[in-house]
Image (spheres, rainbow, N blue to C red):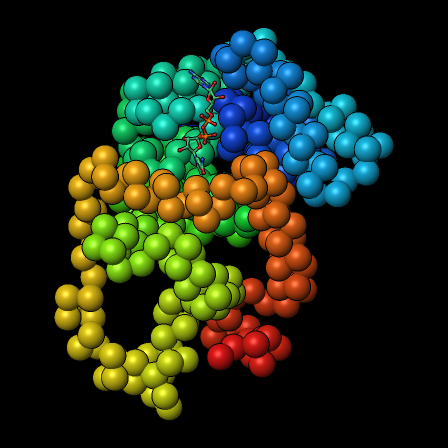
Length: 335
Ligand SMILES: NC(=O)c1ccc[n+]([C@@H]2O[C@H](COP(=O)([O-])OP(=O)(O)OC[C@H]3O[C@@H](n4cnc5c(N)ncnc54)[C@H](O)[C@@H]3O)[C@@H](O)[C@H]2O)c1
């Protein structure tokens, strides 16, 4: 396959292939079924079809989808007999196998071999550079990372990251396609490991582990500080806009004048602490004591219920403020 072969029109996609049906593959499947696509899924785990069906029913239940509608959506799901067979019959592939470079390279090479020319293949990888995954593939130009956030069927963000051999057309295709299925894609211009989202999440998590290690805070306190404070703002304003609104009349400039010096003081201990058995026991013990009364399934239901409520409030408004499109209708909520 050569780069001169055009990609199919994103709006012509009707059949989607899901390779790997664990947590993330199942989330993609739920999203694509709800968006009206036919989905063919495959996973090497024995009995994957039954496990996938059970997971989808659980997701649909949480999304309050009536049983008859669930049945209708599930009728558009087919469980394939092999990765090759799936690749052969679909218009787009979302790979969600294990986060291991050797395994991913093998799966992606196989999909590239069997998918028709013009079909884009996206990997859900959380941080592996596509340049490593696509090396040696004949159709390297149509391979791209489309990194979702969990739960995939609710959180809009997808980070799109091309490798050195990915064509600009493929990146643009992925952006158009994901936007068309209700996602909020962000094209990352650098292949740094961890992209953007996981680097930020993990920076906070590393700092939190240091606080626990030093006896300065518990998981319960840290979770409360985030959810009752910055986290509420972060659901609709990023850190730059937050600080722009904390600097007085001169915005972000005023922020640096007021608080810039504190950034250079040793507030942060961002190198990860050593994960000693003692630290792990402390973190795990405290976290389980804080949340252990509820099963993980109950907590997932609670999470999805709240995300649905939050999205229902935010979606009709602008969730991104740009210099071109202002909507300050939620301003009264900002403190
Ligand atoms: N868990 C998350 O929050 C999250 C978020 C975004 C992206 N991701 C990424 O999504 C991908 C899947 O993660 P997950 O959390 O769903 O893991 P998971 O362990 O739940 O699922 C992985 C699935 O891949 C299957 N598998 C094993 N070998 C395979 C092969 N050779 N070909 C195809 N499938 C194979 C397994 O049977 C399993 O069902 C990873 O690349 C991960 O980094 C995960």
